[in-house]
Structures are given as C-alpha cells and as structure tokens.
Amino acid sequence: MAGTELFGDEERKEVMDVLETGVLFRYGHDSQRNGIWKAKTFEQEFSTYLGVKHTHFCASGTAADSLSLACCGIGYGDEVIVPPYTFIAPIEAVLLAGAIPVFAEIDETLCISPEGIEKAITPRTKAVLIVQVFGSMGRMDEILAVCQKHNLILIEDAAPALGGSYRGKMLGNFGKMSAFSFDYYKIITAGEGGAVATNDDELYDRAHKYSDHGHDHIGNARGAEQHPILGYNFRGSELGAAVVLAQLRKLPYMIEKQKSHQNILKQVLKEFPEIQMRHVPDEAGDSATFLSFFLPDADQATRVFDEFQKEDLSASYWYRNNFHYHRQWGHLKELKSIFNLPVMKMNNVPDYKNLQVPQSDDIMQRLMMTQIMVNWSEEELNTLASKMRSALKKAIK
Ligand SMILES: Cc1ncc(COP(=O)(O)O)c(C=O)c1O
Image (cartoon, rainbow, N blue to C red):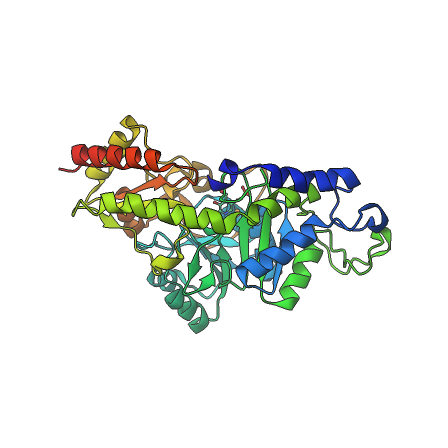
C-alpha cells in the first residue's frame, strides 16, 4: 500500500515536532506546545484536499463510522441499508448504534446499487451507508436521487477509496457525513486513525463534541469546558495526526503513480476479450489502488486467482476471502456478541443467517483484483505485465 511504501523524513519530522513539545493531546496545553497543533493542521489540510467544509480527525475508521451514525441521529430501531461486500466495520458500527443493518445488492461498480437500495427500503429505513469499495465509486447520481426521493440520509464510508473522485468532486464529499480510516492497510496511514467529513456545521459541531465526551471545546482550558451532551472517546492523538499529515501531503503523488501503473497493467487485460473491467462510473476518478476485473464465470476467475498466485502476483478473490464478503461472516449470521445487542431483542429484523443476495454472489464469484503499488520501477512493471499475460493465457479457456 502506498502509505507504507513512502514512510520517510517527512513523517519523522512531523512526529519529532510533537515529541519535542511533549504534548500528545490534541486539545489545550497552549503554552507548552509552541504552536504545534497537528490534529488541527491535518483537519485544515484534509478539508481543503476533499473540498469539504469540515473534517474531524478521530481514533479509527470504525470510530468514524460510529461517529457518522451518531451525528446523523441514527440509533435504536433505525434501519440502515448496507452492502454485503465491505470490511465488516461499518456493519458493526450500525449494530453498536442499536440500529439494524439491512443488506442490499451490489452491482458491477462493486458498491451498493440504487436498485438494491430501493428494494431494501422499509418504513423503518433511516439511512443508506454506501462503502466506496477498493478505490472507486458507486453510481452516485442515482444513489443520491434514491436517497432524496425516499428522504434517506446518505452516509459515505470512503475508507477504501480516499483520493478517488466522481465528476471532479472527491469521494467523501457525497454523504451527509463521511468516514475515512488511516489504519495500516489504507492508502495513507498512521498505523491507526480515522476522520469524518461533512459540509454541515451542526454535524461537525456534534462530531468534535461527541468524540470527546461531549466537551464543547470553547476556550482551551481543559478543565473549564462545558459538556452539553453525553459522548464517548473517539479522539485521535497528536502523534497519529502528525504521521497522517505527512502522508496526506504525499497523496497526490501516490494517486498519480497508481493511475499510471494501473493503466499499464490494464493494457494487458485488454488483450483478453473474455475479461470485462469493473464498472467505474467516472474512470478519471478511480484512485487506482487496485485493478478489478471480471471473468466470464467462477471457474475461470478461480483459475486466474490460482495462476496469479503461482506467478507471485498480488491477487484477491474476495468471494472466498475471510473478511470482506457476507459468506464468511459467521459471527454476524449467528449474532455472536459478548453482550446483548439491541437488534437481538427486536422483532422483524432481517434473517442474517439466510441472507440472500444472488446478484452480489454472481458478481463476486467472477471478480478478481490485484493491488497497485507506488514504488514499482519500470522494469518491475514490465516483469509484472508479462507474468500477468502468461497467467491469464493459462487460466482463460
Ligand atoms: C470500509 C471500511 N470501513 C471502516 C474500516 C475500519 O477502519 P479501522 O481499521 O481504521 O477501524 C475499514 C477497515 O478496513 C474499512 O475497509
């Protein structure tokens, strides 16, 4: 992943700034901190990058999902439409909010589809949580139109697609509130960390308060603030903000490199008429972190996966993957928790054990994905391209 490939003096310098003041906390301690405010600086630069009015740095992407739901007023008994193809974090956040995840079909964008959303709506539906999966976007115009038609809140989890855009607007700028992650496997990383983004002043006000036990952050004297609401601790630290600030400044370079590397490998795929590319509603906005494509059927897709592995090429066959698809979520199917989740006590909740998403199953069975790296040299790229060609020749019949 780009972020971990590019750690360097820039990250070290930002971290040292913080360690030299000794103030690891993002609020207060004005006289000790020598004007060093890494979380605030990150938020200013991140808002500018995304073109949103506000961002708030927090502890993790999962915290950002929880924060988004809480700030949008989603809680006990509300239904939230979610995709069956995602890391499970946003679904856990819905459950923890006391709300009910309702699954909808994805389409060949790999994101939740507008038709799937329409079918999943009930009188209890309050929000749609779209995950912008692995570098690219859903059919945003239609999804926004469905949400508007049914008066639903759109929450955008853009954690896997930071740096992507749709028609010139950055992903993370479409939801009423959007979530990002900076965990170790994301395009920019601080090991752990997250952020929310919004254009709504009221939602931003809720976000910074809720993620710090309801403190209002008026004045900088920590003990003197008011706490008008109950909240939680979703705070991010100055150290995390320092690292992700340095990483953010490298993001345009990462995206440019990924796009150029992805394009070279895409040309190899185009030699095979059997291969169909992932549907990307705005090609120019693909962050190009991955290259995703479909084979005509599951057999050929698994053969491609096996051949890629033999050639030591990065390969993900998400249909069988342990984390990212509903088939492997035994813990969700059985609602295995360590405490009584509100959803366990509710009537008319979806049958998670027998979740039926046939369109998503068909799409996922044909899907193959390979990861794009930033630091590949021209020579490495040429070698990868020829290994890919030979693997595809062997696998496609
Ligand atoms: C779509 C999505 N949302 C949220 C998260 C959670 O992020 P974190 O690991 O920072 O809690 C992830 C992590 O992979 C993710 O892929």
